[in-house]
Length: 433
Image (cartoon, rainbow, N blue to C red; front, top):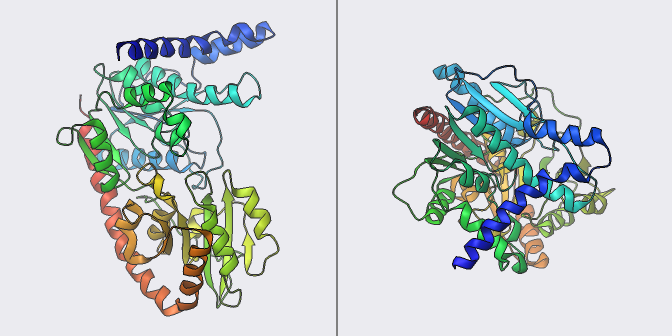
């Protein structure tokens, strides 16, 4: 065990020095100077914001449309308007393919300049992880007199926070997807790797002063990981519900009178079951339904190609948040083995907008536990099994049922808003050193 700890400490040191030595591998003095400057300097900051009581650490932030950054924006704006609480936000100056709304920044925003050494996947992967180290280091260096709240984007941000902030400042974690678990969730070789085990142990070694989870079930899951179920203060805030949310009145081009509108809008990645979407595509009746697809993620191109030119299916590059309510039933999938490691925001966004959803995953997921009265459940299984369930479900659904579940969605949306106001009040209470 002692040997493992020593190995881990050595790896941690090597990991830091690897990136600090990248400047010596570049071809020009100009490149070296650039890496030096972006390691030590952040953009658009002229002085420390001495009024701020909170500092949020996240990879993306508006005007970028990433959903995690948009969630931070909503809290920052609310805390300022409701309580007069000032906030700093430290983020990477990058763009994502997120499906959130395009917002104007709120708060005192610190954008760390992005950089890359080359186009290799290996280099980009480690630089991606190194973003988390740079963000936490900048937060501690510049805003240690505030309460620091780290999100879980970029991956391993909680690991860096635990290594850097524990015992030194008051800090909390706002959980979205869980890392490093999501790296090794369906890869036995990674789970058995001693580096993975060491990082996992360090990530949960010290409890933060408080945490925000995506729902009550994820909160229970996390508290067990920290082995202190009765000590860490926590609140639940489903991702995808906002205090500031607008609905467009003008119907989008893809909307069609007299059809039940289905939609899969968002990430189709490792955590999602592409067989579920394939079964949806194969079993819709174009006389009754229209399916709107707005996809990104590792499986997206394959299923864009598969669905192309099929009757009843339309594509849109990016679905605006203000148009979500024009979709009657949002398709949501989460592989059962990913339960609590992720809680798809598309389900919460659907209900918050007044729409319904169809969910394939675990019944223990916060998605189903919180929202089931406004949804339909498809048991995860083989393609053949899910296709049979969907065929029956699509045959049975009526416009009247959709209207009834939309009414239930409106009631659930009010409860979700209560989660928002309760969690924002919780954070305000925590913003005291």
